[in-house]
Image (cartoon, rainbow, N blue to C red; front, side, top):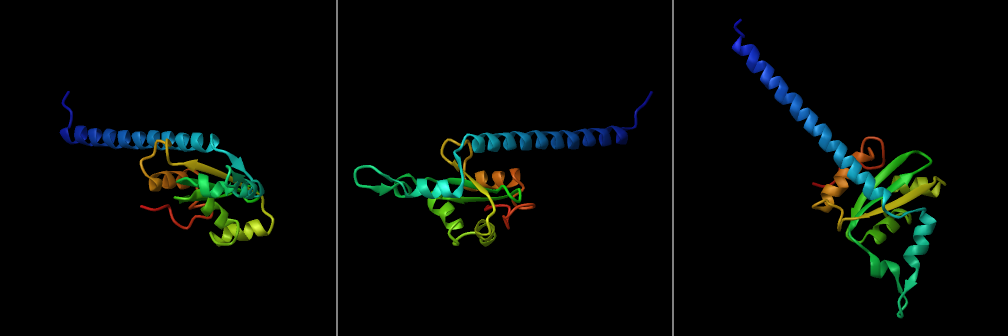
Length: 159
């Protein structure tokens, strides 16, 4: 029995395409699990708790936590009332999260907060996250929580 060489080539191409699709799916699942683990291991708090923490004074000189412990990372603002996410990045994360809840960040997040929606804040440090860059961590987090297609984000993240 002779096989048609064109059929064999088409079969090989088809198998290669399927293999790439499967590898892509496995990679996306692994990244989603990594982002979930980072977020689940981060401290979660409501905006009111965040303000107290940010304004706490530490050390003998009475410096605010924000001036001493501002770190580089990604934050996830979750509107529990509307099941919507906003993901952002910052070199000084405490200052940036504060901006969103004081009217100097995403206007939609601030409006929903002022109208009484319930929010949860999570912050993920870039250091020891396993991601090479802040942009990569932010893009993966936006994708994981559908913050662009079903949330507050207007872009898929920085490149």
